[in-house]
Image (cartoon, rainbow, N blue to C red; front, side, top):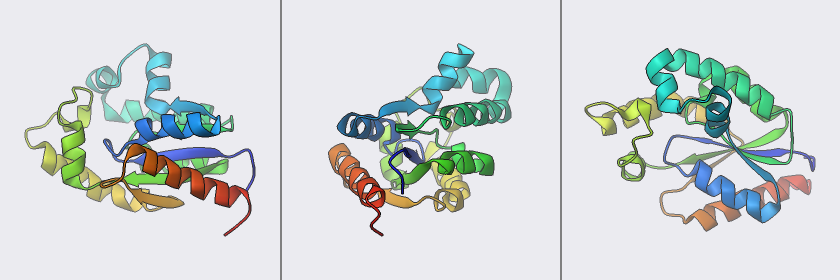
Length: 176
């Protein structure tokens, strides 16, 4: 599969992409890159502020440019934003030199994990659990394009990280 691949984590908010990504990167000695953090550094704005001032469409444009930039390098663990998969060009850029792992969780678990966050602009609505359900159903077909899907509902961060590392190493060693 190639020793110079990235490990790419996609999935809905609250599925553990950043938390798990940091653990995986540390264990295998790769750099950890959070797409949202890079966007914030480059724009000098928070994600909620970008949404508020410019809207989701502009945010998605910035996200696409950042993904193109990040994926020029290898040996990284990349945590994407939950909606990064909505654009085909993002998936293609991430796949070019990466293995894509989708982390998933049930609506209830996602809600429990994100309900106290002020950092989720798409959930600033009256009925967030319904919004989660709606966004999940829109994105599910895109998430299913991943190389591997791991449900994180009943797993610890360590267990999810181990699953990712095991699959990645299996692919790297040429097993199928």
